[in-house]
Image (cartoon, rainbow, N blue to C red; front, side, top):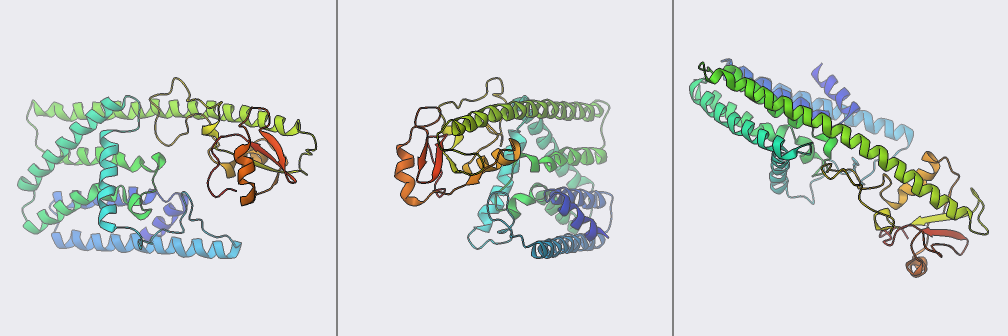
Length: 354
């Protein structure tokens, strides 16, 4: 049944895979620390690998069947799945190193409120986790084969809870890093097996307090991010409404009938500025607007503003005319090139759009 649930969790969100891998690694480490036989844990690990592979294969087959029936092609663009599993142009050793580097960087410099404090707390927890593990490896586990397996599982743990980074060849964003919190669970697990003196018994409470504060900082950071995105949406709405107004002021333009081309990257607009008051909010959110590249503009007009749009891709020979146009909101930023009404909202036009 495990493979069925792996298939289902991949269908919900592929990043859940690394949570499952992390929990399995924690379970096997717990089994070894409980004194379970090496052979039993080893074969349980093989069964779990088969479960993960089986669930992943089932998910892939079902996904491809549905795509075939619906006549939909996988995309190889940002966040696409078309290139997953193709390492022909990738150095696997380099990717493995980067997978470890990414999670270590996120642990030491997390994207959260009071990042310096949380990074310091995480550093202390990591060092204590390593110390506890070494002591338990020497004193708690008696079999050499079990020690080797426990060491391998411990070293694989950072990779396992960041395995999506490896699978996607480095395409990972903040929403996919929630599994990194399993570091705290590993620390609690090791503390459970370590005998503490009267003074040392307060160490777990200090660690729990640090973890609680880290979680609270994440709550604050999440609310800051939500507020920033809400303000960005308002700013984008205001910007695009002004763009529509400029289109409609152009003689000869008929909404829904005249073909239009909206070009230029919004971050290169003279109106662009970073949003003040959110300097601590970093990561994959935009600085000012929610529409980030040229193909999105048409979707924004159609879906967010419910505005009728006839898209008109420009030809290569139109590049010189577009380059010569001033940038919105200057006079002349909206003009006909042939039968297409072009509005240039950013000074930089993305390569391959024209």
